[in-house]
Length: 345
Image (cartoon, rainbow, N blue to C red):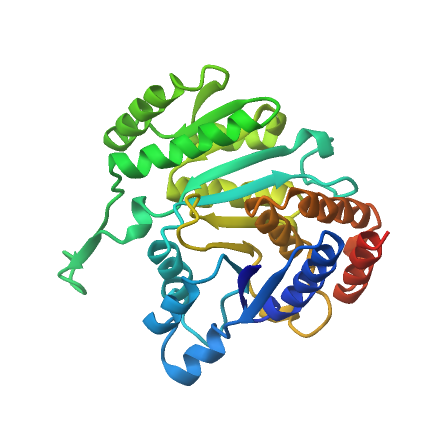
């Protein structure tokens, strides 16, 4: 019996979550998987009503679950950064979700903005370090408002953070057919940080002789992602660089509506969180226009993380079936119905 915390969130979050939960129910019946889903109504409305984004009490409750499914967070009614820091970053740090996993896969029938690239050309995974670097907020400001105002924010990593991220990436690469791992950095400028990353990278690869390793500066990696995405298998990088290149990857695979993510604690001592990356899209909320496939992909990722691989394969096949049916012209409900029809074959 898996315990799954559900955070529909804001905007189209609840719309895509409804589809995701329908798919989850169907596939779990098909594969005889038992689960319990519990709603947590966090997001903009909760913040506006209570003045809190995520209380410590709610956080403690979430720690008792196996996984978390998140729809979307964000609203024009709340200043940028409040919900992102108060919910998303707080969960990542408090639950030690030190891996952000982003598959970049072009499904059959989905058009990529990359000229002449087809489904087989885009099938790689980005491993983003998720709890260190610039996003920890180390730094500050002084003499605010004067011509001498100073602002600083530091990219800080320790050995343990780097080692566990790189080891996860090597282990993932070893499970894949091509067994290739590319470290993405900026060692020619960020010399202190990437001296550490490169040394640990060299240490760990001694234990993985079957994994082919490469290194690319982040700007060169972005060019390759556009020109020759087929060259990548697994990419591993820092928090900030990962944030940037995964959105580039999402656009190449058909846009944010086709991009899912997992915020993982691979030790499973605390719950991992799975979410689409498209945001709350308030401009189309309630119009039955939201593409729910990224949410469904997130459900698939969650099942893979729980080692329910046959159920995950069923969902993947349903996505393949729908992606070849001009789904971009379909409503949210029509996509949901097509997914359910495929799952019930």
